[in-house]
Length: 297
Image (cartoon, rainbow, N blue to C red; front, side):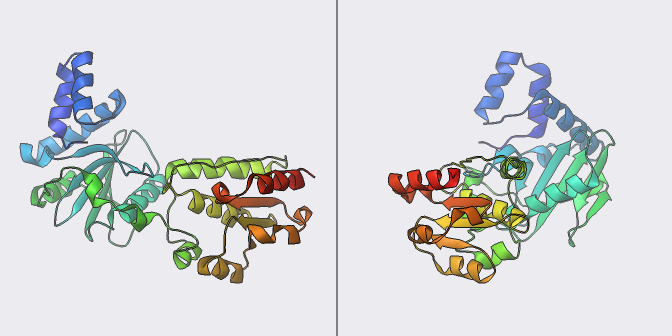
């Protein structure tokens, strides 16, 4: 992905043919719908009324996604003194806006201590900002323009170099304190999967559910988060396909039922409502077949 002037993006959408416009946005690695460009156009008009200085519209990354977890930001602009993030909404609620900006701040805070998170709601022509205390406040476009003007821009080949997945992919077994104290966030995609799985679990129907994905995408965090959500109402057992580490043992001390695969035969599965098998790529086929057969009984 390359940075772009949002003025150029809006003008290209208005003036180029569909074929040429498609080529244009592909060149910059941008995936943006016509509705989103329309929202961006309204934001640009509000800013332009205050300061028609073209430099403040340049060097934006549009629709950037963090690798591995696909966390997406509508607009990002990186400086050595601060990072600016602007989310675009046709309509929304204060609660949803605050939730999204809080998460965005979490991911960006690993790069720079000074983060300015905004959300522009088109239908009400309202600009919100997450303040220093984590609360949402309505602000004027003058503040946004001022921050853009004073930003010392970074020269980047790609934002990918700024993001280290290990900073924000909390491991329940290796970053156990953070996990226990809820110092992590799931992406919207992970939340959607979690809600689907919990719905299936609580529907009182027997089911086998598999969560798969490439390394470093947060499968274990998602799985343990699901267990955290249901363990007060469901009898859960986590079967880890390997030796338990100190993090597992710490969770066990906090009331979690986690066992190594070698100890599975010591447990009667009828005593549990939900059985989670983690790191199944390590399991022997015979062990998996036996586990499925026992669960069906």
